[in-house]
Image (cartoon, rainbow, N blue to C red; front, side):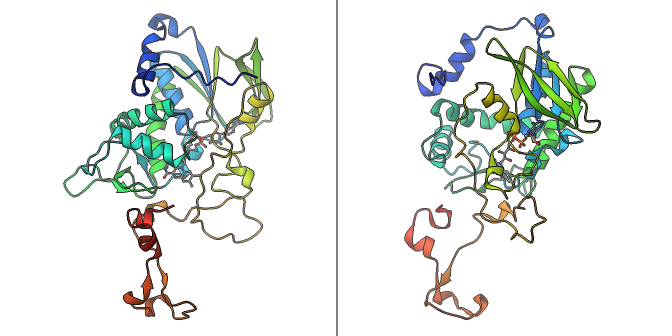
Length: 329
Ligand SMILES: Cc1cc2nc3c(=O)[nH]c(=O)nc-3n(C[C@H](O)[C@H](O)[C@H](O)COP(=O)(O)OP(=O)(O)OC[C@H]3O[C@@H](n4cnc5c(N)ncnc54)[C@H](O)[C@@H]3O)c2cc1C
């Protein structure tokens, strides 16, 4: 087994730009001769399908919900990071890169994270152009909050519904391509298997979730945008439909499966209410970093919190981690 991430060569900040420069372009007139299958219509799938359609490729998009608007990204609440440095608090592309590498326990591929940090600014511009109603300050400028343990405020948000609002933006771009005829959408369909020819993914086997009919679709390339692996923990903030079956099929057909440990933990969920429950509901990521955490300074203090005066509270995170305070993980 050869593990080769096919990381572009060159200095970190230039790797992807160089790679893009080295790639062969496809003649615009030839693009419509290529068909691409996109499975899943969360933020990854909806935007990939819309972008590929806009570029002129023939796209078939498969979505197990009744509409791409219900792709699971709808659940994301807190916000999306970008290194715009609007608050002038010392942010930069390198600092976003560094924080993301650190947040991933130094196990992410550096070239890809650098590209994510570089593109983060374009993504905000694109989402704003699509009409995503990000929060704004009193003067009308885009608002930022501190989020996810960072010392700078770089998170763009739309109340507690950022994922839903971003998905509506991606969905409108996708709908435009569906209307233009470049993307054919198959709602309420589930990918059952991957078709591999000579080592390349060339199609999928699909079930129509309404009629039960099983059919196949062939293409020049297949993008699996089918989301995360969280359901391995049984109850998680992902719905049961986010069940990694598509990635597992690719694995069974020879693809490498890496880093299942890359699962974000949401510690603040509404408590489990009974056995009927299939998922957890996040309370609100919007509250993170806005409050202060404390315990009674006196051990065994039984008084209700509001009866404990300020000078008898121990803000232990601020005491133990003076520079990160309540942002400490
Ligand atoms: C509660 C919650 C809060 C979050 N908050 C934030 C946040 O504040 N900021 C942030 O940056 N990130 C946040 N995230 C993470 C972020 O939402 C996800 O990483 C991101 O939306 C994933 O997008 P995706 O398109 O890769 O996958 P998804 O949005 O999961 O889309 C994949 C889609 O594929 C479908 N699918 C799966 N298998 C198949 C199959 N076999 N056939 C057909 N379709 C299939 C799924 O139903 C799903 O709709 C949050 C996540 C959750 C769950």
